[in-house]
Length: 134
Image (cartoon, rainbow, N blue to C red; front, side):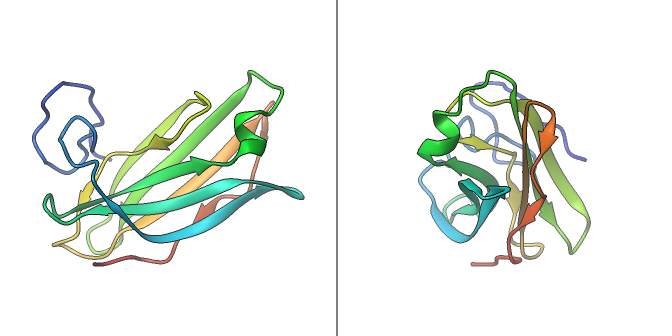
């Protein structure tokens, strides 16, 4: 697993935060809905910035998750590159906004986004996108 750090002005290396590395202008390559039982909670996406040549996993929550009446919500995301097994993960408290994991280069191979949401100790199924390559 690659380090996920929070330094300002990060370089554009594998595992870096896309916002701090200046790579946030991105497109969604693929996405998958995430559900908890009958409740749709949002989308797990692979985001991509062509200038940086990097992709990352992002949770785009919907109103049902943003307004869910619990303070015990966690987001688990992983950016995974099957070609070499590289991964960047987060497991953090939900801040009622988008969350993302560190980015990985797409020059080595396609990238998968995996995600899970835990509400009051109950985990959703783990969702995985298709392997995306620009």
